[in-house]
Image (cartoon, rainbow, N blue to C red):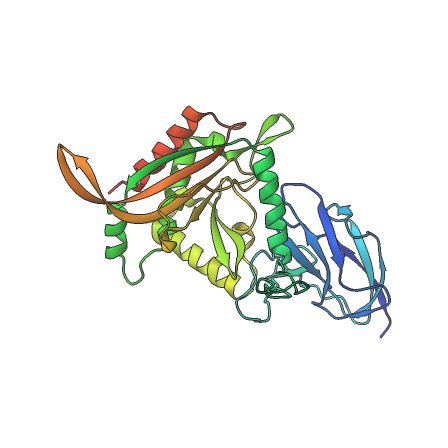
Length: 350
């Protein structure tokens, strides 16, 4: 069968419009490649990713070097295909969460014309060196990207922090009454933030070039830790969904990440505000770093019994501490306080 020159273009990786940077090429010109084999690693404003070949053949040429920034649709390389180019396209998937086991990835169909997939860490972290010359602990590409972006966030975003506690009694009652499966805790906070965002919609903007720019989506992100890599699952239109529906989306997304599978486009395309929950670890309160280009992140602690005064009497309530980290370029303290109070009111609804 005759060979066909197939251009490999940069897929749309659902970024905020910024160019994608090439981290390294995994295949050299002249080497054979198979359909689905990773060709290169790239970095977006959200994650590190592997881009895979859509055909089987030989890599003829590469048009960009490592470190170059590439726009969506630009031709990065050419592969001489030894077989017809498949018509079914695959969706790109960020690799900020490695699967706990080396399960083969299963990319989902989407109109991108490229492959990208979740990838297990190439090397596990090495224990601390006991002697001079011993190997140092290593970081996955996803962890390196997270380290760079979070450092940039703290250095360039003027964070300020507000804290309130909420009565978690209503949430406890709803979880106990839910059958056949209790909703995940994060579902309550996702919906509360989404409802509050309808009134305080300035949080759905980002600061860019001296102006406020509306985000492309008002979805609420949920930070998920999978095999020590940080990923975010975005829940779109959360204010219109029930707690059970939101919980099902979070569970399904987390399971896909743990299996190394791709998320639906709506669950990985970014949003307005992210929540991060350390309640399961017993941590009662903490402050989180904003996930750019978002304007805020809500940190959630453990639900714990506390004595509180009610009508002059000491009453035991199960309460949860909420800490809002906000971008002072986007909102001021009073506006952020109103938003956080609205989140608390929604959580405490019976």
